[in-house]
Image (cartoon, rainbow, N blue to C red; front, top):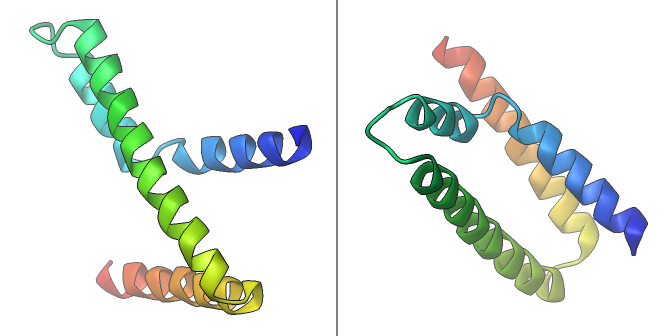
Length: 89
């Protein structure tokens, strides 16, 4: 259990560093008119909500599709997103 927990924690944590969500939270935290608890709480709840959606949809899809199909599809989506980003720049 701990191995899975640490793997998920590390991969999500590293993926979020420098992400647009983190940059938005950083920007809100610099605003003096926003209480720190409101920025931290709002950002935390938003991340919790988006993670819950990803988890529940992923869990449901995992009961319907084979793991290989999910892995290949996920890989193709990442590749296509990378190509799209390169072409946009």
